[in-house]
Length: 215
Image: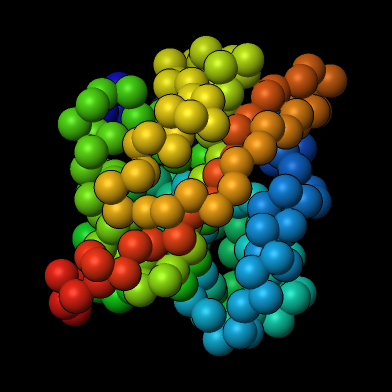
């Protein structure tokens, strides 16, 4: 699934399914927030949530006092729903509507968070493109936090094939530009009481590639 077909697929999901009925529904994204707390970031740190849709991660970041938050998603409807939920607080967020494969960053981020997009990339060249974009977009000593379906997780999500990862294969994917901090598995219970197993990893950007990026 590519381009316009992919966008229309996600638009249809956000148009027809309430947030509390989708498999990724998570009113308290505790694992993602755990990483944020451990990092002890300055409140001015630049954080981007890739594939953030209308998740509650941004709500919690605002509650924690973070001041420079970006949410990127392919679906305009997802962003619209998130803005409606946040009300006036939505003005504090930078919203980017694009496919991650079409994203051309114009600034760098201190934290790149992705619990939703990476495992949908099944073609090798798409994975390579993602890695290249992340390498450009993450600041010197910046942090990459990524959650994907594990090898014990589902093989599809929302009717789309995904790519499963282990802690080892995830580490190997990002080793050229990033140093692994930690990886672990975690179970996510869906609204329909099924269990999805995820691998979460955090990485620190290697210093030796920082000077290559100019904005």
